[in-house]
Amino acid sequence: MSRALKALGVVAATVLLASGCAAGTHPGAAAVVGDTEISVGDVDKVSRAVSGALGQPFETKVTLSELVNNALVRQVRDQRSVTVSDAETAAAMKLVVRDPAAYQKFESDPVAKDFLAQVAATAVATIKLGGGTGVTDPQVQQAQKAGLTVVKDASKNIEVNVAPRFGKWTDGAIDGAISGSLSEESAQAKAKREAAEAQQQQQQQPQG
Image 1 (cartoon, one colour):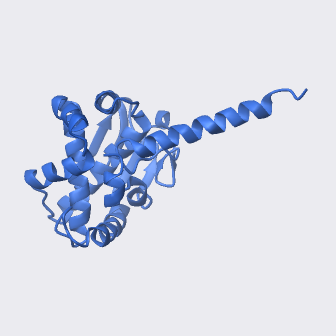
Image 2 (cartoon, rainbow, N blue to C red; image 1 turned 90 degrees about the horizontal axis):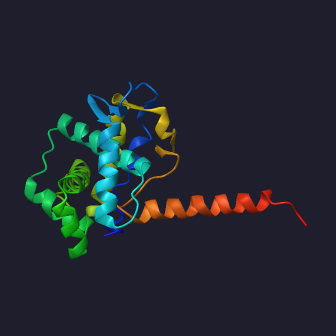
Image 3 (cartoon, rainbow, N blue to C red; image 1 turned 180 degrees about the vertical axis):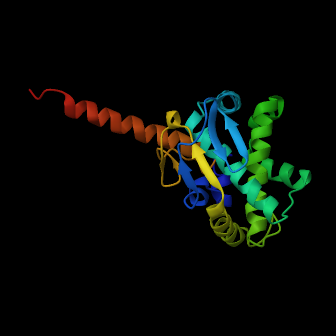
């Protein structure tokens, strides 16, 4: 499960590098992507649901990054009349979550299931935007790479505003915390942060 989206190459940071990122949201909004608003409540709700399905913390900053990416790709695919069927989404969902037990946990929680479906549809749409047929395309990596370029170019005209409480965008992600999957990258980001904090604490200790 943890390597599925990374294998597909659907990484939000690559897509968001070209979009405008300013603190232009109103109270209660975590982000506004074009004509789509993502509320703070939605971010918290999704973060809790996915954390429960994964059995480990899924941070709100990573959740917001994924939700922004989903909204951005959805708007680009609508602009270009690219469709993603329910069957295509379902197939991609099983690639994202390969473990049957984990998949069942996502299926049993409506919020987690909807988020997984959004991520899967984003993967399929990105591949199709690059000229591919979907996740089973023999040239899937080339197609998704081309799709990311299409989204990157199209997103220049889609404004992305993020609430200051969630931090600032660094290399297309909030404070560098971005996931290329539903679990692996967020865990790595957490480990990296904790290691840096531990090192800082050691440096601050008085030398005897």
